Length: 300
Image (tube, rainbow, N blue to C red; front, top):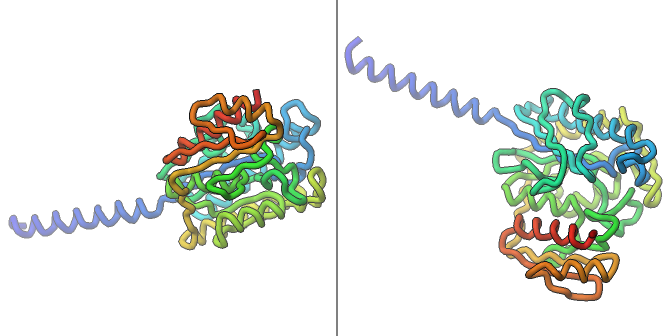
């Protein structure tokens, strides 16, 4: 082969390798799953989601089962990486030894991004499992917003939000869409209204007041979550990213005036009413971290 022929062959080989690399890269699908507990099928009472409470160990099994269903649904859709973040309470609820071996688990607390710890720009999609309605919802099983002991309501830039809505903005901060959520029927409706019509939902129970529900049994809930996860990821091209506004204005209304008194001791946190405080940050993640600090001070 002459020099010219060798150069052409080398160029063709390099082009093939480049195309192969890019094709391989485009086949990567990284999925992030945040798992709460109040929205899990069968869960209706606070002692089920509290360490040491009656049926807590059973509720841990149901929660792990729903996480596994979402993992398997993601794998069915071609996921090459699945990260699960235990997002309830002390964040040590998922039974690690029973979790699907193809996933990685983020567990324990405190964590800088709390329910969204570990998420970054490398992920393609976010899924919420076991989530619940915001505080003050009709027929929302165990409804609350971050803390049932302190938060009456949370507004971000004038819009009242629950955990799913705020966490979807954290996902949007990193440019990642929330594509599927699972929880009670009213939560699914709230989430779709706030996050977008593209959202696929899995209603695993229907609230009958705050502490009762008409619920799927765990095995049926797992089947539904697996199916809906695959459906959502197969339709990823239709997903929308919810980018947070800047600046971000957080207004927190507490249950008691003493909690607002404690929160206003933090610099840049302004008292706006007997039970309310407000603060502003240009960066949404900074605002969220300040919100977490406000909650910790208020609760103590």
